[in-house]
Image (cartoon, rainbow, N blue to C red; front, side, top):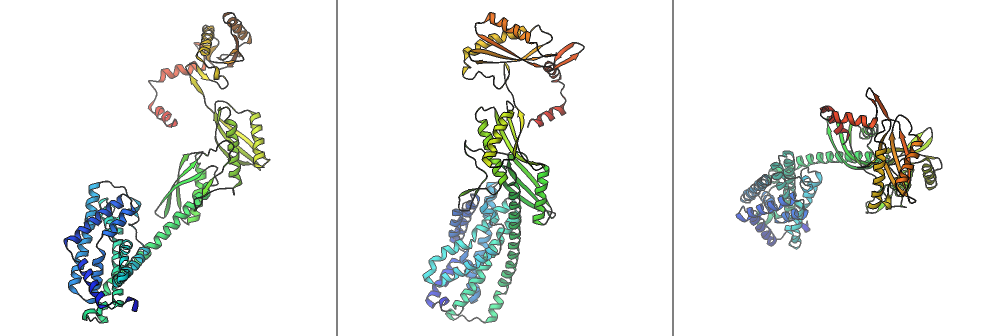
Length: 563
């Protein structure tokens, strides 16, 4: 082949360069040490640029060319010299990786390290092409500047450094995989470079005479090893393909399943195979915990898709979607071009998004209620939207009617029925429970609080000697230039309105302000041999007496339930 032919002058230059570069001298091992250290730090820091720098400095590719040329020409001295340089250099690189990894201690595996622990057939094909490119660049002086690129492609030192780091971490399998990557590169360059040198006529230069039987004898072992490792890496590639198919199938199935659950997003997904069962651990962001029934349904879908038993564990992270006032957005998906699109192919999710936003905007007016989540229910062909809310008051039927009308108009679904599930919360201070609608608001100045404090003292005194009724809480507000007091009273029956009038009359004689009293009667009385006692006082009494003797089991239950 004319394009691969080499002149006698060029052969002498190439032979000299390969022979000098394969010399196991001090300069060679210094470069091995430096390139290995650079590669180790690049792998640990997960820096591709640093790893590439190590490839450029590494001198181990030239002795491989030396071994190839020696086998082609039958030069025993060059073969021994190049083989010695390569073997000692390989041992030195792996050893330095082990020593550095041991000195640094507990190293966190990085993607740069992990990518070199499982070689496959693609790595072998890259090495084959790089071997040809390197040998071709040596033969043709016009393209010899491409050799640094070949050094980057072959990646001789980084796998050796990674092998040493893995062994230092106790990851023997990863160390073997990294060394296997180096060995595959070594064999590929050796075999392909040898073939290129033969085709270029380098075996015939300077009087060398080689018979076909000599080629067979010299290259039988490298070729057999190359075929075996190619078969092994081919099998590894099939395994990697199967793993990627399994990972993609699992992720696609989970994504499809979680997309049907309102405001739920799939996070991380991990899996491992044990005794033919695929164990899947995933993180899901959702406004509510998934139920065991939901997890079982998804697990069955996984088993059906992958064709083997699946065991699913879902780690739920509570989250929700919040849009600005007047904005209604559903799930957004990022495309490969970096843009985002709204998912509008699921009518149920769109309806939920609109329902949530309308309810949140309504609650934003008075801050008394918060929406937790909205979930769709289908009962007897009815479209129900169950809204779970949390706040200091209950939502009124009138409000529900207004919201339901807005939701129907926005979504265009006139048969939607809105339901609410209320979770109550209370606000308390030193004066008792703070009831919604009984805040001082802008009137809550120190002077006004002082005005109400005197009236509170008189009200508490009025109930001090009353054995039938107990005043447990007082709420006050200033409205229309009048002080309003809501008294929460526990007793055997409704607090008489005559008593309320008497209290108002008594306070009117003492204070110049207009005072209005409201009595909230709560019939919560416990009767015992000592006489009637309010339920609140009864609980408080037993709670105080049991503090010292609270069973350890009960303490654990209380602590666990509050998490």
